[in-house]
Length: 314
Image 1: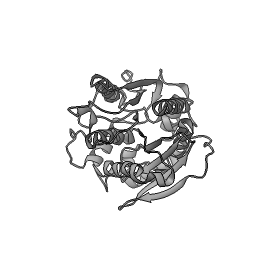
Image 2: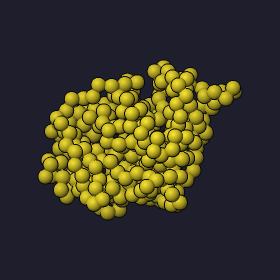
Image 3: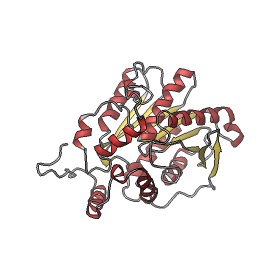
């Protein structure tokens, strides 16, 4: 879907509640993160992203702790007694986002999957560019497998992440395969999978759909900090061999600059012989998973994620 002839984004096929949210942001003159800069973008995101959620699911008090050196902040949610662990990696362009911005979604997902969920706050760019966040995610995964039993964590692990977190999860699944670590699955929600190229959806939804092309380019430039964008650990879609990976749930939003690379990754995973469940959520934008206070689509998606995780563990 291209912009209208008058240059305004065509939001006619968006869900009404998301269209109203975007129009309100435009009227308020809300600046995008690339225009705010790192410090202000982080401060604004802590408030705005958390505010997109509605009433949080009641769970036992989450346990906060750190892993390793340098310390990785983690938060453990106990959503039920299913013998499996979700390792959750939050989105935010590798630069913003935190345990707190994704607290509502993490709670809901832990309950929907009926399991323990470990949310990981990996190091961020530009202070800690690629592959620091991925290295932290790998350390968290290895900790769950080797030491998580002390907190009752099962070592049947499903990776989960949204956006930049999904990019890290996909790269971590590749590392795990190469290291002989068996994963129960990966759930990739509107993932960034190709940091070297732009697609038709990047152009079609370049502005006016929550994540702009300008902001995306800013995120990528800061995350890579001169690293090779074709490195498969940055761009999993460009990995020469995707065979032998764990089962995958991959979800795209149909009004998202990242839509086409998500579609492409699902197709390549399937072509390589992996089990893939693919959904494209109609009428949605990037980021909708953490917007339960805005759109019912958030809890619809988390319900699907929880059911899929339970199936993988059954």
